Image (tube, rainbow, N blue to C red):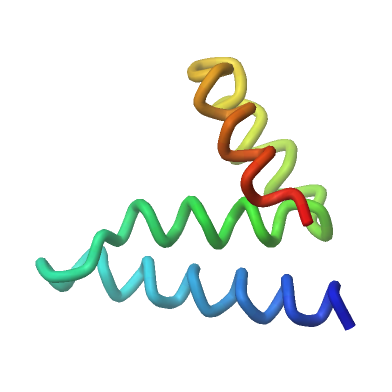
Length: 71
């Protein structure tokens, strides 16, 4: 049940982030990042291609956000 809620929230935040990229009222990058972190435990693609470069560029930020989204 916890996994289903995490995946559902991740998809919701990714969709909201994508919409936010085109609407000036919503912070699209913030919601996309939150959605990717929620979906990362279930997706090898997201872990290797998207989050790994982010971890190397901004290690302190990555650790803080990872602790926040680890359920």
